[in-house]
Length: 168
Image (cartoon, rainbow, N blue to C red; front, side, top):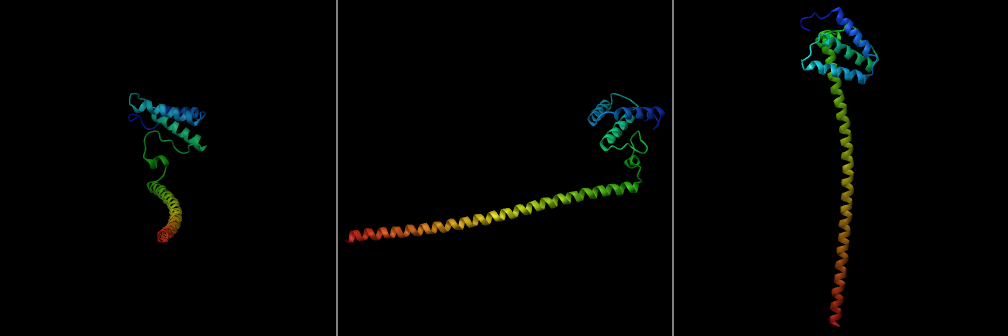
């Protein structure tokens, strides 16, 4: 592609024909065909100056099928900087990038807040469980003390009864 200028009439015709044939297919078919096209040319064994044209047609057909809106604006055939592909100035591209980054951070903060709320609810639940178990331990200790007291009284009565029986 480096020997050819960025645009020829046959490039436009190939793009239009490829795009037109792809829009009649479903997303899965277009995705599969795009993967096949990429796998053919990624290894470098095939050389086709229409590769970028066909690739852009596949990308735009996928975009059309996903959003229902046709690609508007100029189609850039070869590799171009991101801001040239979108038609944005350098400042606009930077602002858009920063807005996307801010959105990611706000989403992360929201996720962390929900996780914090879940953790706090779990902490309250565990504290309630600790209180219940402490109460159960105290109840069992009282029962144990009562049982020991009962055994002490019974043993004392038994010893007194034995002593009285031997005494008399």
